[in-house]
Image: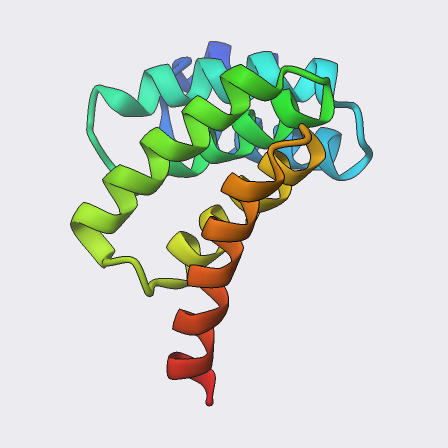
Length: 133
């Protein structure tokens, strides 16, 4: 269906890109990270030309895929880059920033980097206590 829509509307048509994002999200939800990763990467590259928030969303999902595929170093770098961009625009306390900080902490912990993970997660906990009471 996506190929037909891309032929009729153009590969970069917003509807076609939306369908591709939905397909990638379904693949990720089904834990098919190998197939979701290249799709999120391609979408991030396309969206980066317009510098919209979809770029960061696709990069964040690609990082989750990488983390689940055991590519922890690359995933961690991607999470941190996306967090920096999100923090610059929405602040460290935005929902996306909080989720990214949690992902970074969990990934650090899973990689045996306990001290770094504790630093990230302790700071996150403090911020969440302030925000949520």
